[in-house]
Length: 236
Image 1 (cartoon, rainbow, N blue to C red):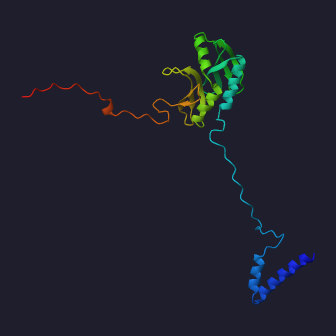
Image 2: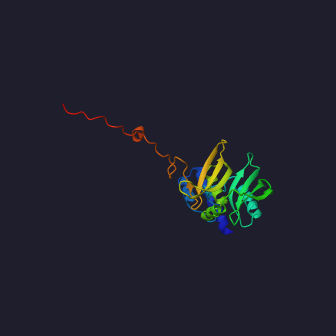
Image 3: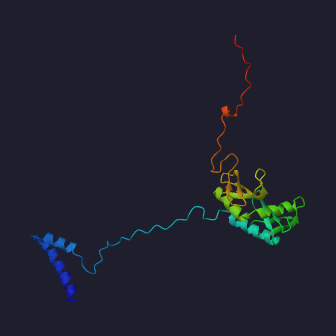
């Protein structure tokens, strides 16, 4: 208690010296300000520390828009064909119904229709006799990523886009198994994106190098074939 009174008296004396203009009053006040008073909170009232910046979500970690619907439709399709593998998905114009093809364990391709909103099978699976079973089995065995992984890769290439078609097929030039997708972008234009079904890498579009840059076009001089040389003139 006496210590508390001593603090008040010391502060009062300092203020009084400043008010009366006593010599050394200012110096005394400076000394008081420079002396740390035990238990006194020196933080300015009303000021709060700035919040620490929180980490932002890394690019590519968010689930692309529309992927959840595709996975829900795909799950309904595989449940309709136990042990099957989705090899094609095709949405109608408004995206409310999907035509889904599932390859059975014996390579039989089963086609069905699924409501996009309810994920209910509206047309039961029916075999597609024109699809070669052996080739379908080879194609499914070559693919190391499924339809959902391929869809995520494809949608990641077209932010804000809507996947309208996805198909597992064999590339003509290389013979690789690839997932080819069609995406409607925000401007309503359709973009095609292909994904290597074995590695999961996005493949360059036609006319692009693996780095995503356009292949340099040959100059007219490079493409022009040399014409036949004229007859040699005999020396005169």
